[in-house]
Amino acid sequence: MNHKLLGRDFALAIAGQIVSLFGNAILRFSLPLFLLRETGSSALFGMVTACSLLPMILLSLLGGVLADRVNKRNIMVLLDFSKAGIIAGFYFLVGKAPTIPLFIVTLMLLYGISGTYQPAVQASIPALVAKDYILTASAIVNQIGSMANFIGPVIGGWIYGLWGLEPILEISVGCFALSAVMEIFIKIPFVKRPREKPALQIARQDLLEGCRFLRVDQPVFLKVSLIIAGLNLILSAMITVGIPVLTVEHLGFSDQLLGVAQGLLAAGGVLGGLLTALLGKRLQPERAYVFLILCAMLTLLMGAGMLWSNTPYLKYLILSGTGTAITIFSTMFSIQMLAVVQRETPEHLIGKVIACIMTLIMCAQPIGQLTYGIFLEQISAVPIITGAGAISMCIALYAKKVLSELGGVTSNG
Image (tube, rainbow, N blue to C red):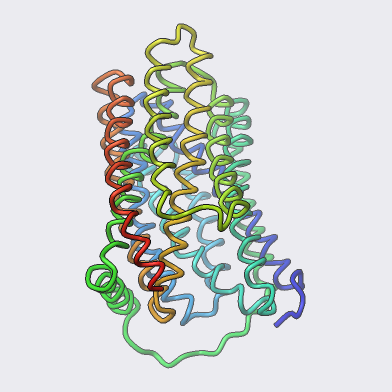
């Protein structure tokens, strides 16, 4: 183990992360956009983005189990080479194979690999840095992911707008291959464990144990999880599907401007995390519902702006601005709630409970994405956005009631 933060192995892991996540980010932006441009169907766009999340939900559970039982370096190397191979295959099949099945399968494979890849990276941190640096190292890894999601759409939009999909695919294959080669040289201590139960069975048992804790011991945490799932269903899905569809199809803007809008949304997530860290103890979990009220009001403002604005550019600014602010406040709410769960859950159950909560939260988003895709093809955007704002306000008022119960939990913990 290294006794400093930026030892050789950790530096290689970080460099590999930067390159790999950048390749991921430009692909996640460009592939759905290509499909939207080619078909002009928001329903199809919503269906494909929803389908792509399903393997990520399943494999993120398996990823944590595998990270404890398989050499983490080998997992990262194999998955990055696999992504390079998948995109190379996609490159040669575009225009030859049926478009929609090809996109669905490719995105499902990419998201599924991401669900397995990230737990391996996170689990490798304690083996790569000294104990005193684990928190700092985790923050670096998380910020790299956030920055890749911010920079990727901006650069991806610029490249896609100028030269199309082909250079995006070539760059991403190069990114994944380079990342895999760098990761080969990482030395992560590994002790082979005896074969126990199958990974799926272990993941199922962990999930059931976490659900039992939420249902029986801390039902208030289950309610909080349902609130965050509601946010994903109503707000996150609206932003993920709505902003690309409205920017490209309804307002007729360029791919570069869509990239800027999605980069701003990712920056909102980064800023929300930074504000939560800076404000720290001044934030009271019992009053976090205020952030949800702000999200609901901003969503209603977005709908009003789309109704009353006369110029496409003003509508674009309102969409991007309110969407970014919603991302900031929803991130601040989610981080506070997950921090309470982490603080008040027994140590031996934290991983299982968080896995259960994250699975519940992630399951909501594909449903929302599919629904918004269908709605945006059938009716105008204003009633959809206004309805989302009204439902979000109901969620915020329910959250006010639920969060009042957190005082007893934290005082007892």
